[in-house]
Image (cartoon, rainbow over all chains, first blue to last red):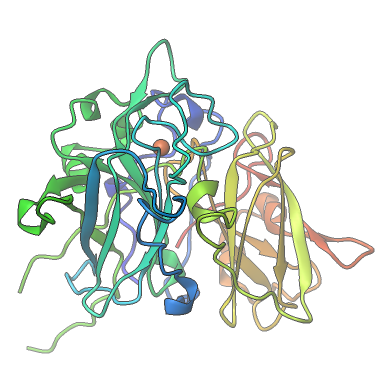
Length: 231
Length: 160
Ligand SMILES: [Fe+2]
C-alpha cells in the first residue's frame, strides 16, 4: 500500500469546525510498516446489494410513489492512485432529503420528512470501477457551529476498496453551489484542490433526457506501492 | 503514462452516519458478515478528550482471516463487536469515524493473553502509552477496552 499523504486530508484538529475540538487526538500517530499492516479487507459482492439499493428515489417509496425533489443521477469511477479502475468497490451513501432533512432520530430540523425517502443507498463498482445511483438533489441544512452555519448540498460516501487501509469516508458537493465556500466543514480541507476533488461536475452528456440530470464524481483510493521498473 | 492521482480527501462522517452505514432495514438491509462461531466478545467505551461518551460513532473491526464487523456506539458511548479467538496476530484493527473526526482513526485492541513480544508496532509505542491498546479480560471471557480520543490517557492511533 502506498503511504497515506496526510497533506491531502483535513488535520484532526480544525477549531472552525467545533465538533473536532474534543475529538481530535493530540499525540502524534504511530507509523505502521506497510509490511506489517494487514492488507486484507472484507470482500463484498452482489449478494450484499439489494435490487433497489442504487435507487434512493424508489427504495423507500410506497408502491407507485417516488421521493420528492429534483431527480439526479450520480456516477463516476473508483480509481487507485495509478488511475486504474477498482472493480468490486462497495460504496455506501447517505444524504438529506430535498428539504435538507435527514431521516434520523437526532435530526430535529424544521424541514419535513419525505415519507417516500430514506436517504440511504449502496452500490458495487463494475469491472472498470464504474458506479451509478439515482437520487434526488439533497437540500442545504443548518447545523450547530456558531450563530449561523449551513451545510452545502452534499452526499456522504463510505468506500471499501480491496484493502482495509483504503477505507474512506467523505462527502460529495455539487459544482456551482454558493454554500460550499461558507461551510466550516468544507473549510477543514487543506486547499482548493481538495475542495475541487470533492465537487461533482454537472455532466449533461450523461443526463437521462426528460428524466434526470447527471453529476460526475470520481473517487481515488490509495493504491499498491509501485515496484521499481527495470529500464 | 498518466501522472499519479491523489487520494480523495476525507470528510467527517457526521452525526447521521447510521443512515448509510447502519441502516435499519426499512429501505436497505444492514451490511452483515456472520460472526465467527467460536468467537469472543470485544467491547468498551469511546470517550472524547473531556471524558464525555461519544454516542454517535461507528467502529469497524478487521481481524486476520478476513473477519470484519462494525457497530455504532450507543447513548453511553459503548461499543461491542464479535471477533474470532486470537490467532497468529495478538490484535484486531479498529477504525473509528464520527462527527468531529475529520479522517478515520486507526487503532488496535491487543489481547492481554496473547504474546505481544514480537509485535513491531507495539515496540514502536512509548512504553507508558502501550497499555492504552491492551484490553482486559473479564470473568465472562469478554475483552474490554476503553478508547479515548484525547485527554491524559489518549489512545494510541496509527498511520498505516
Ligand atoms: Fe450531512
